Length: 313
Image 1 (cartoon, helix red, strand yellow):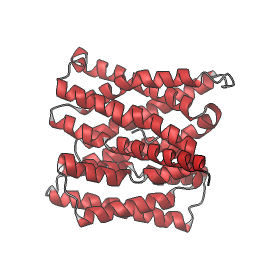
Image 2 (image 1 turned 180 degrees about the vertical axis):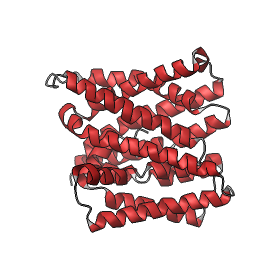
Image 3 (image 1 turned 90 degrees about the vertical axis):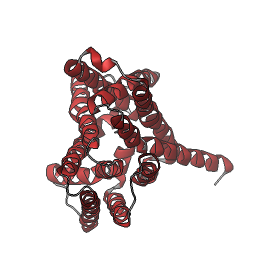
Image 4 (image 1 turned 60 degrees about the vertical axis):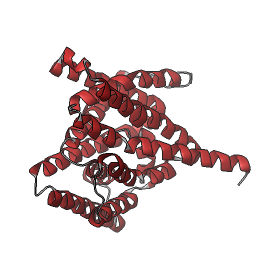
């Protein structure tokens, strides 16, 4: 390997690692904001409002390629559907669920989406599940069961743990649908243009939702909450989206998806440091099983789609 290739690969790995840390910190910023009295809708509102200009710039940047295909009515319908029914819905469900469960449990539950892509592919496209895939599903859901059991035990059986986990699991399901539906458009439009368009639609939908439900008061935030909203937007949304895209260009989607599997572990450690969430042996074992199962369930095609659309939730 030449020195130029080595530097290029090292830079790509570094970019993807920083991107993974940024995505992993989202749950931490959200929990800190919740501790200050912020609700889920307000935080998602500000996250997407502050991110929207950058998504629009991504669209403009992609337009520099004069060979970009023209968007037809059917394309706009698909982009709107994916942005609203996929990304917008998954974001709302995720942040609502995070109000009831720990950051580590939220991250692990959300991390199940490649296994849900596999199941949806089996249900709707009738692709057979190989033995390796069945083992992957078993490991993943055994792992998440251990973590849920751990949190239920430490909360003395609080039903909110199950409510929060279910909401985040529905978020993960919605995101899996978004990933499956996005494949043809990504191949046609490219990941940067597609991501900019769908996340812009999702951002506008969140803003309209927030203003319709809470009105002008949603625009009034105390400075500590606003600072966390800015961090959620810039550090855990905008920055990792573009760093991941740059990293993929250097090392490829499958390897980027593999590096991204460190995300749940990073959230565990960040949760310990900033939220004082405990890390027990049972919790770590559950996380290990989930990560192993997800890695086994990710085919090369799934890895490309997952990394290309970014883990921006």
